[in-house]
Image 1 (cartoon, helix red, strand yellow):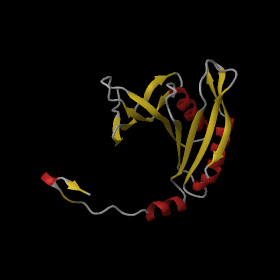
Image 2: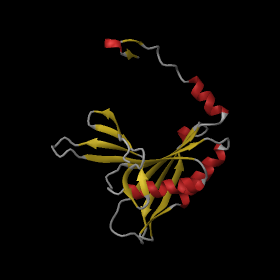
Image 3: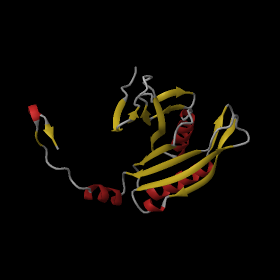
Image 4: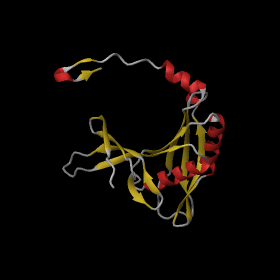
Amino acid sequence: MMGVCLFIVLGFGFQMRLHPEGGHSVIKDGVADFSIEELVFDGTETAKRLVTGEAKIWKGIEYVEDGLRQVFGTANTYQEIFLALVVYVKSAEFGECVTKVGNCLSAFKGHHNGKALYQCTEHVELNAYKGTPVRVFRSVHKVTEDGVGSYPHRVLYSYIIDLKTEEAKAVRAAKPKRAAAKPGRKGRTTV
């Protein structure tokens, strides 16, 4: 059964695709959960993929490793500006999960046909997000000598999002409330 692909227009000439039920570009290592694409208005109706991403719910480090394999495996156009991995943490051990994800990113080696293709050469946690319910890592993965062809390095942003701790709940509770809906044209409500 095919899933519905959701398009979100991000501004003139850009769209975000969310790919439920099977994702995008099925290959051996899985599928991408979302992508941000630049629309090309030249009659070909094509889209240049700018970001490819994968989302996982934390159930252990093996889910993060699967997500890394999927995002590197589906980012096969080499047009992407960067790759993204989103990890949702529903357990109370958020700090421990952040450490484990960081270690996994550093140790990850992408594989292609049984050969090591990517190796993490740079890995940093972005300071602007330290101590918040959203932690962000930036890592650079370069092609190793085992890799085939002349592929560029890949930049991966990993977002670890706390959904459980009291601090995360307090941040969500403090978020400004939306204005009350008012009646619009023909029975529609607008905000």
